[in-house]
Image (tube, rainbow over all chains, first blue to last red; front, side, top):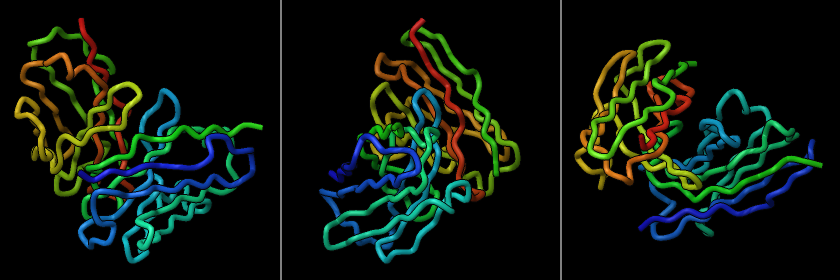
Length: 121
Length: 108
């Protein structure tokens, strides 16, 4: 059974960089059939796409966040990572990593449990 | 980008009843690329439906999706206790993919 697990700081200061890593287990990250994505959910609100990446490093970013986002992949560690620069309180959310069926912003079939990141001084 | 509007905001039903959830798009969704997810408190979303009407692996057949163009529906034929949750639609036919704001199905 494929499993994904987010890790990283739960508190980030305003204007700093949010960094999270997703570790994939129980399956291969190196498949051309899938991308690997990041989605976030502010407390009490709905879901928002951040972006996704293939195992070869091809990326897709939501244009609303594109100027501040970098997603990278390390297939040797079966991990992919998210960096979000210049964060503000509006970036406080539960951040999920997930497997994307096919590519870009397509459906997400396996999800991590999510990690709450709070932006506060 | 396409805006998805889900209705109603909250649906109050009893176990055994039929639930009908609506997702309306601000413009036609290419190839009816519309998915549905279920989310329970404190949990990640669970993938239910893709391509408007195809059930994901392991999803019970009491869940069904229908619709095309701008109007889509998720139907739960007979509500089980574990079905009370928030449901989100997600269109992926037009980039960027977008999600609806959710419909909460609560116990009456």
